[in-house]
Length: 477
Image 1 (tube, rainbow, N blue to C red):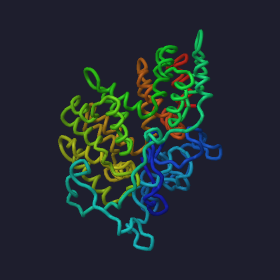
Image 2: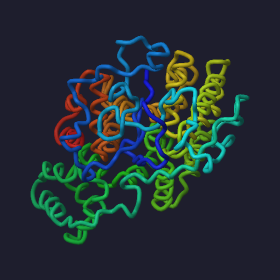
Image 3: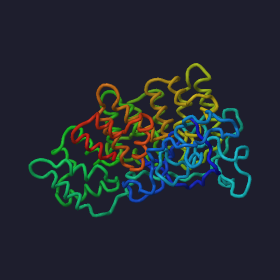
């Protein structure tokens, strides 16, 4: 994996925030932050082609280090994700391309040998600084014996994702869609095509308004009618859509924790890689829905280091997306991760958890790139070698969430379909989670094509059938 540095300084703190399902600085070089491009839920405008199929990876990719410092890997080798815009990585954040643009997490930083830049406009401003957190859930216990890491400036909080803020409700007339749904389910038989057409690509902000309009106009529950008229995984998918992203997360968490045993992978899907704002929204909604604390339920269901890891995640104390990436702090994290894994017998699990659960996606991306450059091994490979079971899966997902969310989700979808039998419930949950952001859908399909050499939609068609197939395909097209 190889990344070239951008051709400019670090971005200002207030760049756009990331949203869940929406790519903020996303994966293996992909940011989780996207500029608004038209109406939410609509595909990107034609002039902003997100992922030219005929040219991926693009030619003339940037290498890390830059050519004048020795090329690694050698030129003419494929780099993933490929830098864009004349070797600049990350590319400018103007389009919905895959990999998405990113303003942070590059390694090494620009202006090598002079950081921060000692000239007018230097970043970060020296008068707004605070020391990075060490110990507890905020990071490693001490500065690893190296010089003190660069202090972090005050960062802007990441906004909640669409559908995670009660104020993010669309105040529009939904009588047309409500009437169309009622007509599709009234009388003998059900018009499944209309249900799919109305619901499959509805933005999360419109879901509460639709359900309210249906109740007011027809004095019926939309969810109850769906349950009555539909069945199987088709019903399962429509109900997941009607819950909206926040309540669907809450439903999945309860499903993961109820009964005997714990569905740890479902906990991972919902909680890992989330912004502090989204974690807080999820905890509040869980408490309101089930009259129980999510932290208490997790603690009672899990034990030992796994429970400690989730406590770190649920503390909602990650560095915000706007937190800058300092090379000295990145290098210190890399050295500490190496010391806690490859450099000794028996990994220090909580040290690794503490670093990866507290860093922003941009910082994790920089750590992963710097680790591979320094030790010639991918951080994900190191984790797989030194961990096992659920802890391995969770830590790998943390790295993928910071490095490339689109590739993370592409791999997760393939995992539902590979081997004998299809994990249908998990496939539905993951498709629904991805589909809330149309730009992210484009990137996930591009990542899947790049990794597996086939189209995601075609793969899903081969594993599903009937209305179940049609609703999944509609969410991804």
